Image (cartoon, rainbow, N blue to C red):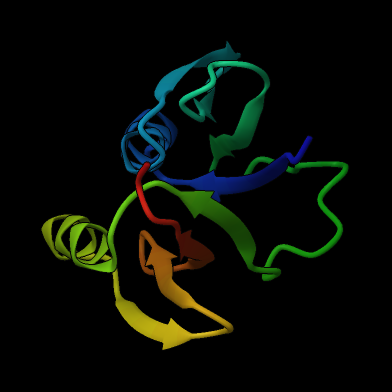
Length: 115
C-alpha cells in the first residue's frame, strides 16, 4: 500500500486530474481535502489538501511523490500541457514524466504498459 499527501490551490481539481491519469476516481476526503484513487478503487493513493493548511504528518513539503500510472508518456504530457503544469520526460530505469502540479509540487509518474 502506498499513500502520500500534497497541497493544492484546487484540491478537487488536482485530485481529479491525477485520478484520471491513474484511470481511477477522485472523492472528497473530509473537510476541503480530496483523494485520488487508482483503478483498483481501494485505498486512496494521494490525498490533496488545501494549500497553506498544515499537514501534520508531511515530513517534507518538497519531496517528490512517485506514482505508477497506466498511461503513455504522450498521454501524461498532453494532460500536463492542458493543465499548464510544467513536465518533462525522463529515463529513470524506464520512462518517467516529472510534473510540477500547479507549478509547485513535484509528482513523478512512472509509465507502465497497458495490458
